[in-house]
Length: 317
Ligand code: XMP
Image (cartoon, rainbow, N blue to C red):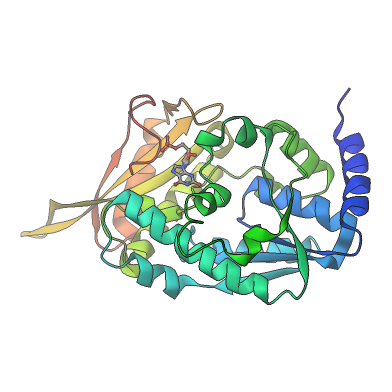
């Protein structure tokens, strides 16, 4: 029977033999899969694993610093790369969701390629691919898929010519979590909701600006913090907020104002392929709405998305 301890023992031994004294590069996303893959490879080869964690400026509030800190606490050899401005520049003026995804994918490749050249003589690329990614490659939307759909632009980047090492390739998500837990990975990383690679860029409908990102980060922070404080976070499969490209009328004193609308989305799901909207308590929603409208300048209306997938997707773009 499969146990995480036995999986870790054989995998670490295999990795040691496979990699020897070679150097491995791995891109961390802050998500479960890349974190667990990194810890396994780290157990096998230690400092010869070079992790790269890119700040694309599209993460949740405080997430980059927090996660980078956890990675360092875990003993990983990790470099945090601030590439926010490159992503914002590439996104400027783009409104089409697929154009935004492409732009983000391209900048990610450029940054990752540049960083990987700084690791002299690397032989391997570590990846957190899990079994469902292998069998349903159509549904893979992570960095590797982004990379695959863009490698024809200007030739294959050098890091893609490296040999690939994917220690989680035979595991399902719940097994990955068990392995991560056994490896002592921060529960905050293991229990984290899924978050899309293009991040907040696809939750800002229309064009992305640093100002819009800042507004959405505050809204999202209030929503997620409240879910945690109310003990609802673990009952929800994924949650977040969307910044809508409409102005809605409001009233302040005897003036009419036109300000932004945000939509909150929370769903229950097994694998993201189908999803039901979460029946969050009215009182909870009322408190979150009040806090957002009182604290986030520029937002005067909060709506809650009560659509299920299909036909509505989880993200709005
Ligand atoms: P949808 O919106 O298609 O989302 O119901 C299903 C799951 O996929 C995530 N998602 C993405 N993840 N890059 C990603 O890495 C993307 O472009 C992307 N689009 C959607 C979404 O957050 C949900 O978990």
